[in-house]
Amino acid sequence: QVQVMESGGGLVQAGGSLRLSCVASGISGMIRSMGWYRQAPGKQRELVATIGSGGSTNYGDSVKGRFTISGDNAEKTVYLQMNSLKSDDTAVYYCKAVRANFGTVYWGEGTLVTVSS
Image 1: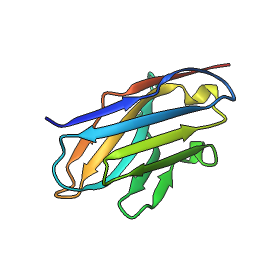
Image 2: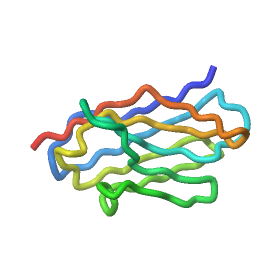
Image 3: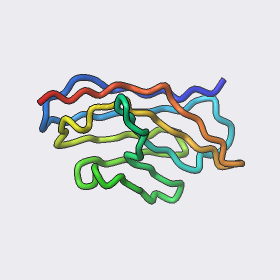
C-alpha cells in the first residue's frame, strides 16, 4: 500500500523556524518529483515548493527566500525548512509525490503548522 507521511508540524511563534519531513513508501519505481502544498481554512490549496528529479526547485511567491525544499527522490524523501515564519503561513501542509511512470500522483494526509503572532 502506498503511503505518503508528513511529520514535523506544530505550533511556532512568528519569526521562528520549523522543518517538515515527508517519506513516501510503497511506490514502485522512481519518483519524478516531490513537493509541498498548503491549505488554510476557507482558502485554496496553494503551491509551497517542489523539487524535480533533476534537482530543480520551484517556490510559491509567498515563501521565496524564506523556505527551502530539499530531498532525495531515490530515497523518496523530501524536507521543507521554513524560516521567518509568519501568521499567514498557518495552514495544513500536504506532501505530494509523483511517480515517474505515468505521472501517478500521491498525497499525504497533511500536517498542521500553526504560527502564532
